[in-house]
Amino acid sequence: SAVISQKPSRDICQRGTSLTIQCQVDSQVTMMFWYRQQPGQSLTLIATANQGSEATYESGFVIDKFPISRPNLTFSTLTVSNMSPEDSSIYLCSVEGTSGGKETQYFGPGTRLLVL
Amino acid sequence: KQEVTQIPAALSVPEGENLVLNCSFTDSAIYNLQWFRQDPGKGLTSLLLIQSSQREQTSGRLNASLDKSSGRSTLYIAASQPGDSATYLCAVSFGNEKLTFGTGTRLTIIP
Image 1 (cartoon, rainbow over the protein chains, first blue to last red):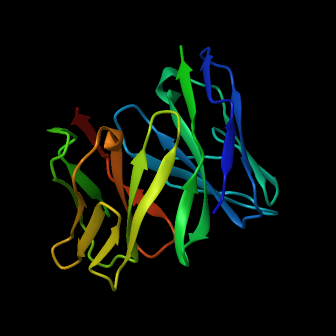
Image 2 (cartoon, rainbow over the protein chains, first blue to last red):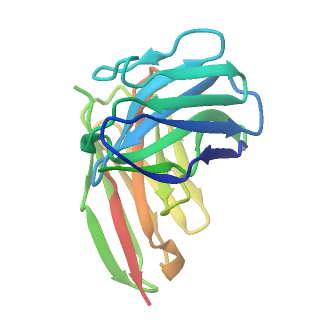
Image 3 (cartoon, rainbow over the protein chains, first blue to last red):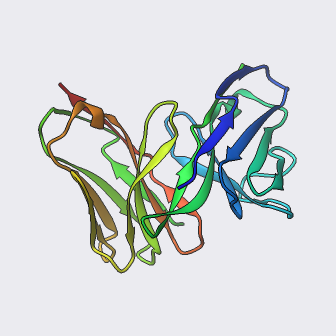
C-alpha cells in the first residue's frame, strides 16, 4: 500500500496568483499522477509525472498553466499558474501500487482550491 | 471517445437495505474496472478491482460485477449502514494505464 499526503489541504486564492501543491508518498514510486475534480464533475487526469523526465500532459492541459516538478521518487509538486475562478477544483495526487497482489491506484486526500 | 457514466447521480436509501450502483462505459476493450469510494477531505479509497477477464469481485458486503459485452458494471452493497454514505466512483482503464472516471453516485444511508 501507499500513504499519500498533500499540502495544503485547502486554500483560497486571488485571481492572477499561483499556488503550488505538494504531494508526498511514503514509498518510492515510478509514476505519479495529478488529477483535477471540478465541482460536480468527475476526476480528470492532468498529467503523469515520472522522475527525471518532463511530465506528460493530457489533452487540454499545458505545462505553462500546470508546471510539475518530480525531483525524486517520493515527491512531486503541481503549480496552478495565473489562476482564474475556473481553476476552483479539488486537485488530487495519485500513485500506482499493489494491494493483495493486485494493481490499484492510491490517492491523496486532495487539495481544495477556491479562486476568487 | 471513451466515456464512463454513472446513474443516478444521487441515491438515498434506509439503513439495512440492499442497493445497486450502476456504471456504464462506451468501449468494451477495457483492461480493468475499479470502484472507489470518496469521502470529503479524505481522497479516494479503492474498493474493488475487476480485471477484464473476470466477471465479479467480492469484499465483505460489497460485490462488483462486470459485463464487458454490454458495457456495464454494478456495485452491490448488502445490508447498508450509515457509514456507507459517500460518493462512489467507477473508473475504467482502457489499457493505457490511465483511468477514466465516471461522475459518481452520491449515496446517503438514512438511519
